[in-house]
Amino acid sequence: MYSIGEFSRLTELSVKALRYYHNEHILEPDYVDDDSGYWYYRKASLEKAEMIKMLRQLEFSIPEIREITDNFTDDSEVLPFLILQREKIRLKSDKSQF
Image (cartoon, rainbow, N blue to C red; front, side):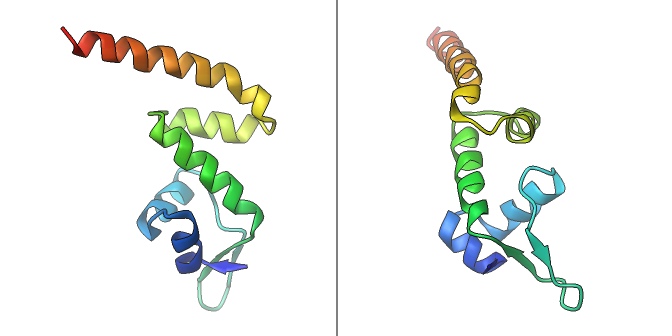
């Protein structure tokens, strides 16, 4: 288990971002110590954190990320979302050139 600080360093997500993602129900700690309130994450959560980072870099909204992370586990299931997002970014880029 990694403390929130260790997890933050490993994922390069700030503690503030981790708390925000927790509040948005897209990346929650795996364990919260009842006495101290400290948050801990398992190694398996690293992959989900990396996916969230990638989706944010691709300009997905928090609700879109929640939908993807809640409903799809296989990368092939996420592909249609990525294709659609690529098109949105392309259209946005085309508009900004004028």
